[in-house]
Length: 232
Image 1 (tube, one colour):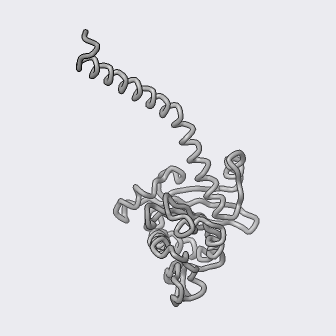
Image 2 (image 1 turned 90 degrees about the vertical axis):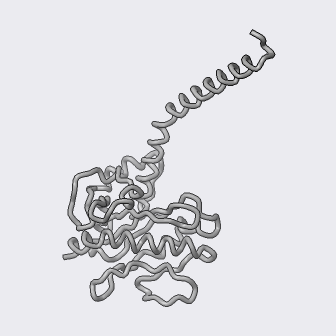
Image 3 (image 1 turned 180 degrees about the horizontal axis):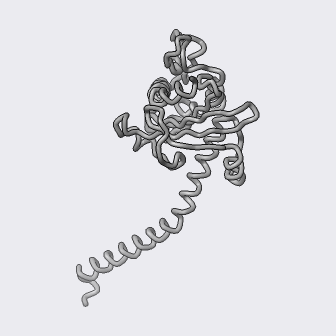
């Protein structure tokens, strides 16, 4: 074979591409269990953070097992259905019709009593945002909140995942005096809204703030029948 010919060059390049692809595939497969595990731990930490329980990668499993006393799946009629709450993918569920949507619920025993944790997912400026809202047993008053994002701007929209922003939600209510769902307004400067239903938006992060407000309204609406049944 002419080592200087095109055939040799093409074969050599093809073999190298195959070898590199095989190595990368092997590395990816080897790392996948660890990646899945890291995602699981991070999710447990976020759920616990929504009820103001701190955890680390080392103790999240134990604390989660101790504190999360029940988890189940409901539909938009507030009825319990089969499924694993922890494995529910809200992105996929939100793409379904309301009658087909499945929603996870987590119950946590805290020093302040039983709390109900509702996962949520929406869209910010640059990509998905998500979070967990915990409610008191009145199914109305927010006990805690934890938010995160895929790529919001540091110092602007990314501020939704800061403790200072999340703390604003504590004590706010999602139903009005008539029992109708009001949700939470993430307000712009000067925007008028009832104090019990309002938090301050992110300065310079208007689109992310609006996306978070939409997320809360849309997902509280999906959980509305469940919340009303629990209240009655």
